Image (tube, rainbow, N blue to C red; front, side, top):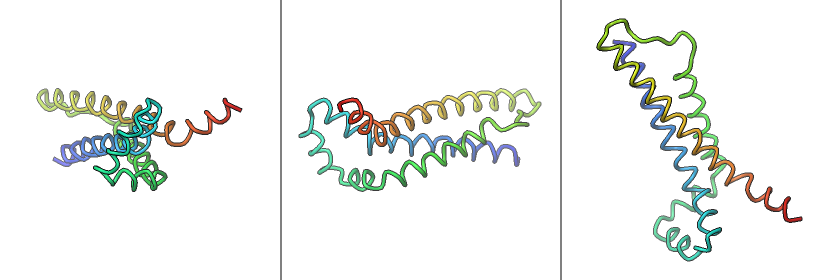
Length: 132
């Protein structure tokens, strides 16, 4: 029973990491993409409809720190040494499927976080460096 509770926590943490890393895209990558495509008016209407985007953008260091920490923690839970499934056939199949899905979700979250990090912290300095 303790092992099942631990797996539920692991899955919940993985999905929370995916949710927070998606927030990094919304706060930082989406505005850059819209501006790059010449859709400044769309961005302005989006910000007026969802003003929390401004708060997320202003606090991007905290957003990336929290989401990165959740990614590291969920990665440790997924890939930690000594991790195994129960010997019961029914539980073993469920455990194996959960491990596969947790790894997939974690991988997607990691890719989204990297895209958001690049957009928020590296795209502008790289652009300035290349245009000088």
